[in-house]
Amino acid sequence: MQEGVTGMLSWTGERIIPKLLKPTNGMLLEHIARYYFATPYIRGRVLDLACGTGYGCHMVAKDRKREVTEIVGVDIDPETVEYANREYNHQKVVYQQGDALDPHLPEKLGMFDTILSFETIEHVADDVRFMDQLYRLLKPGGTLVLSSPFGRGRGMPTSEPFHVHQLTPEEFQELFVRFSDVDIYYQRGVTFEKPRNGVRYFIGVAVCTK
Image (cartoon, rainbow, N blue to C red):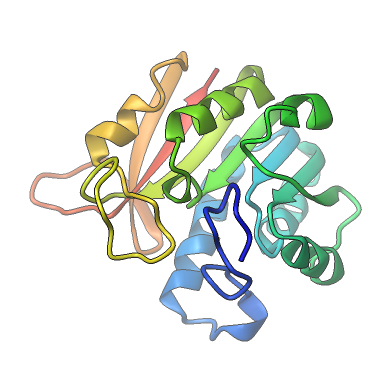
């Protein structure tokens, strides 16, 4: 087990490995949908923090080849980074091992026009520090696209074994007060929408401009 950005995730914990899953697997489809949702916002130098097995970086590199100059995929687990380099290699993508809470990460990586962070913050005990790190890594005018499942709230237990906690929708929105422009969407399966009365949502997605 590895401690760090993914909050003690093992290689088989919550890693999405598309080649080992059926194409109709619900979790796989939800994860892929988040990358497709994010593609219109992706440009320039891109960071995928807690990139996992690399399928998302590869998707983005192919879909946004004209808009993207470089994609850096960072994950805490060295086995995962090795797998990504082997299975999802692309000329515009660089995978490397790193901890999102490493205070020297901005100096090591530089700054980015776009940052993607999907299903990561719920694994981090200090979500405020995590958000501060993302803010330091993002260029002025840059875009952050971040998703997280909803739950009982900060510091409250969760039924998910790899989640430290799951924020409430209100706590989720409060994460982005430093950004100049914020749009919150809600994911239902592979669809994304603004909230509707009477509909319960389990995942929030924020699109933020610094």
